[in-house]
Structures are given as structure tokens and as C-alpha cells.
Image (cartoon, rainbow, N blue to C red; front, top):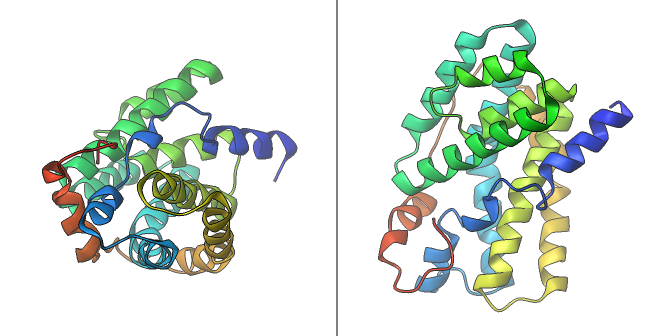
Length: 225
């Protein structure tokens, strides 16, 4: 990866980059309120479920597919993936969270990159799901598919740990230990995704889906999803 591409990747995946991802727990808050996730062990199981059943088969695969399509100039394929990502998620709050983060990412990056062509391409996205938005930005920064998957995967895993630190009784050291163990699995996850770019997106994570749909019933909430 070129030095500037590396630096820009760090910038846009950092929690300091104001896309609002910190406001969403993707169902973790519901699971914590119900007692399903209550310590480091159960949070590790939640992260494992996310990595295998959400990142590899859906979000990460969508990112890779979009980047390959953008590289080939097939914007229509990216539009279809954006529509499919919205349709495949049963929880309305998660659909809103994904598009909210994606639209803010595109809006902010458009403002700081000052590239009219990027702005025009980003406008055609019907929903701008997060994975699609990150694909646009990574592609514009000159980041390759593998590095983009690693960066996006780290961003998502770090978000889970950050939410966990606010929701359950774990310390910073336990959180960093969990993050380290799961980020060490990202290279293999990226390899699996890049070998499956001809396969359709798949979403079978009923545990996460139920918690995400039940978030509206949590009595006291810190997060929007």
C-alpha cells in the first residue's frame, strides 16, 4: 500500500472520524440488557458470530464485490449490491444505522477530497450502506481489496469492543485482548472473502437479528440500535 493510501485508511477507519458509528451497538445493547452478553467470554462469542456470519458472508463480501465493480467501472453492480444489503437486513434500526453511517462517510469524504467525479458517483447510491460507502472511499484512496477488508473488519470489531466496554463489566485490558484475538483472524477472513466474490451475499444470523429487532423495547438505552 502506498504511504498516503495507508495514512488515509487510518484516518477514515479511526473512531475520531465523525461518521457517528459510536452511536450504534448493532443489537449488542439488547443482548447485554437481556443478560445474553454479560462478560468477556460471552462478548467473545458475540464477536465470533459477527466475524463468521456477518462479516465474511455479508458485509465484508459486499465491500469486496463493490470494490471490484468500481475498479471495473460497473457502477450498476454497486447499486444492486447497495439495494441487496438493505433488503437482506430484517431489522429496520440496523438498516438505518448502516445507511446513516454510510451517508455521513460519503458526505464528509466528499467535502475533504474535493473531487467532483467522486461526488457524482456517490450520488447514485440509493441507500449508501456502510460497506458500500467504505468501498467507494477505499477505492478512491487507492486501497486494494485485501487491505480494505482488513481495515473495515478492524473498524467493525473495534466498534463492538467499544460498545461492550460501555455495556458490560469488562476492563480495557480485557477489551484489547478480545480485539487482538479477533483481529488476528482478519487475514484469514479476508482470504475467504476474496475467494468467494462470485458468490451471493448471505445473511443467517438469527441471534443478532432478534436482538437488533428487540432494541426498541430496551427500557434504558445508550445506543440507537
